[in-house]
Length: 273
Image 1 (spheres, one colour):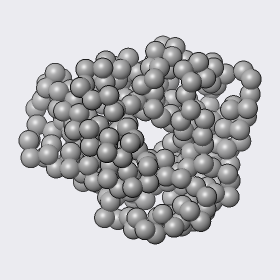
Image 2 (cartoon, rainbow, N blue to C red; image 1 turned 30 degrees about the vertical axis):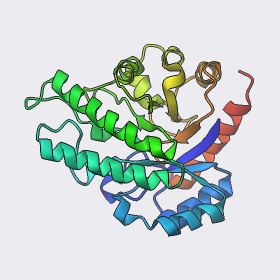
Image 3 (cartoon, rainbow, N blue to C red; image 1 turned 135 degrees about the vertical axis):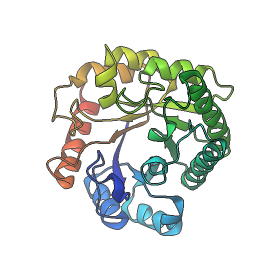
Image 4 (cartoon, helix red, strand yellow; image 1 turned 180 degrees about the horizontal axis):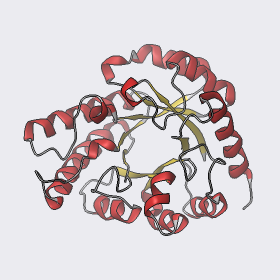
């Protein structure tokens, strides 16, 4: 398993669960100093990123790009994949494609979380889930050219009513014709929705493609009440070799949150438990 940390450039999301906020240059350099394998970046749009400069910063720090998030599509641009308006759904899918294309240049994945939308008075649950499935079909097929999967994240009930559990996500992904969509299992969301986090990870099996490594209260690992021993045993049992990425509040501050996550990563990945 490999270490990863989140880096946000989206000012509208300030105060949210992203660890580093000090811009690409400082944040990537700091991640490299702490020994992180990769960063996961949340940017306002592809246009806000200078991809050549990003590549140079990553190379200089000895850090990879694990993934680019699409969350700004919703937070900043109010685009979501279950919108009842067909043109807005097309715009949302195109936004996702641009993120896939930018990430793909680095062999990195794109993540769909908050852009999945929800059912409401304007679109019923079956239709909304169908719109989401269409978008995942499109995005998964588009990502295949870069030999990386598209990553889909079930969220807790307070953030979506599409898929809230790993089982919901597995059912959705199994219904697709593409096999190039994997699950992001965020331990914080799982702590709200799952009866047994370790059991849910085992049930996810080879569909588990990315992990948000965070404690029960969305603080860095060690700042909440999760027992990580069974979680780590479950990940080893499914031969998970992807990233454990800190999508956590920068508590008590970004630098200490990054240091604490790295301490926890080293402890739990080296522990025989």
